Image 1 (cartoon, rainbow, N blue to C red):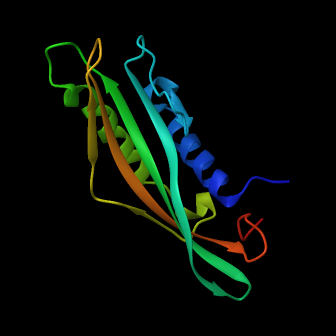
Image 2 (image 1 turned 135 degrees about the horizontal axis):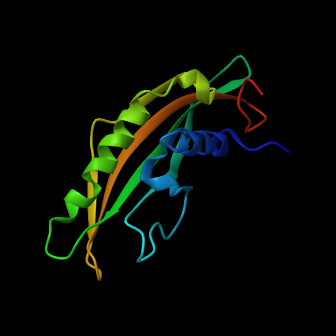
Image 3 (image 1 turned 180 degrees about the vertical axis):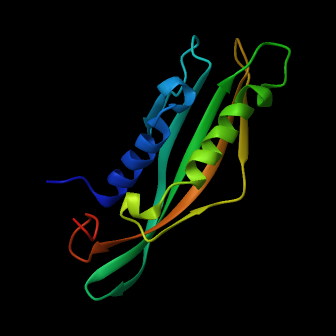
Length: 149
């Protein structure tokens, strides 16, 4: 059985972030629960958030799937933790904004013009900057695979 459209979207976004030069030194994972070890300074997690079908036409479901791209950076004690993630956030935004929807078997990709920040106090401070994408795509009514599969 082939992967669902949702898993394929997540994997395609991970692959886009891995293209040379790989973001976060190649530390890019789908749906990972612990993004950074104490020794790592940056990472990206591509997280499937939610998906809902908007309509049914011609034997198809049109979906709007939200995927969050979480950029993590670990900073030095005594410095603004947002600085630790700023460069990675900018690189990820540039990479995500240039993705062709057809490369994901999607109809459209909307990059939400908002960034959500989270900060964690640890041995070395960590910041997370999250950007959300909403991807419009289609599946057959009776399958969860992409329409073109």
